[in-house]
Length: 186
Length: 206
Image (cartoon, rainbow over all chains, first blue to last red; front, top):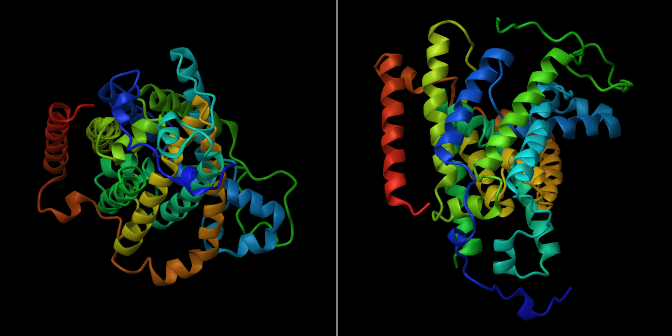
């Protein structure tokens, strides 16, 4: 991997709109997700959410590697890790998205998204891995602290008109917009 | 069919296991809880991908305020869900699941999440969808999320004592703080969000 100044030079200012948009109308998709929320409330007595699944995996791994210590941590005492509905939901998301992408001819099968390559170059794999990993760490920490993510607060919480969810969702976007502008628009 | 509140039989509470005992099989919920979760997840993932929000450039495009697909999906879900869920609750068909309002934790956690969201481009749900779509970089996000969750757990005692209490207002909703009845607030909010969506649809390129 080339580490000289030239390869760190940011390439293009990106235009997301020149890449393809959604396969279906976002309004239809959103409305159907709203209906799906009604189903999960009714049949599973649970709101849609995603970040908890990752915390469950972390806790289960912790229980295998360092059980005494993990079980002493407040978050895991309050939320005993288990292989539950929330984790199955996220596993289902992976499967459902695969079926959707495959059926629509939109499987990507690559490490570096095209627009990332446009900005950071085609040999920026290590950078992408580090940045995505760091992003994941911050999102998990932030979601647990806020009490949910863009699904749990951003959809399920806001539709219930929970004040904390609206505060969280607005902060998600403020933090995201500022960071994305610094990464891609400057 | 009723929304049952029975605790799944296989759940072990921390009282039942000693600290040094690792169960041979990790605790799990029974199949009648898990199967719907998987099914709903498959639908959710399918919809997320068809809605374009498993795509890196769509997600970053939203955060760059160029592509409003993400907001269109989310607000549409919120409008339909808000009306449907409040109606079902009014008809005593469901329970609500309101998360507590803790102003410091919501905002600091929210901002941290936002930074992470822009860095990885994927969020916890859309990242899983992106992985299903074949975006292998989402795997780095997944591993990061597992690691970050554990780091949070390490800090969770301190955060719950020092940060959570700041601006802790409990499980309040908009109709709790407004001197209006719930139906007015729900229908009014949905109407406002519809107007926002119409404006976006006409003002935004995508």
